[in-house]
Length: 184
Image (cartoon, rainbow, N blue to C red; front, side):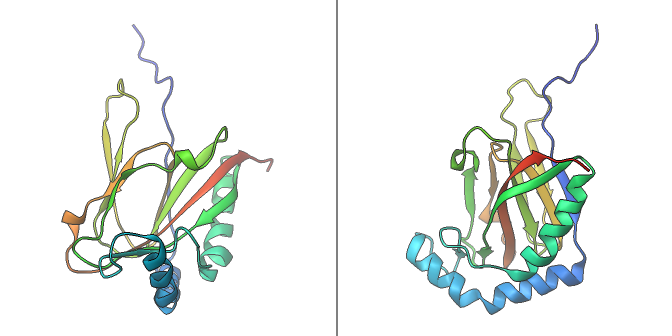
């Protein structure tokens, strides 16, 4: 009998330079009041614990000008490129700041959709859960590391548990995109 891995899913991981990650974090902190204003108007969690600009994204120039082109270059080695990118900021600043189990798949239909997380602090882990009940692995944890980026299929359920809060703020820059074939 042969074992055949027939429908595996693919995650992609990379890392940006720490100085660039800190520049992005500084830009986010410079725009924190704007992010908090959007969050207060659109979220039920108090901004003292969690804030996000998901509903009305505030442009983080250093992400769009430096990180996105770098990701496009790295993905080109797999003959892929990102299109229709939507990014936002997530700031977990208090003990009740968390992100319950969710996925990003219902935002789009009929396309190869991926989500990504750029970690800007070394706080907590993201728990990913397998949607295939026959798989050998049911869960994967990605530890936050400054400048780490993980790309994953948007259908994958994931969460950040507030029990991991250590008193330090957790900053991430999540994004959704389509991965489409490209010619190199």
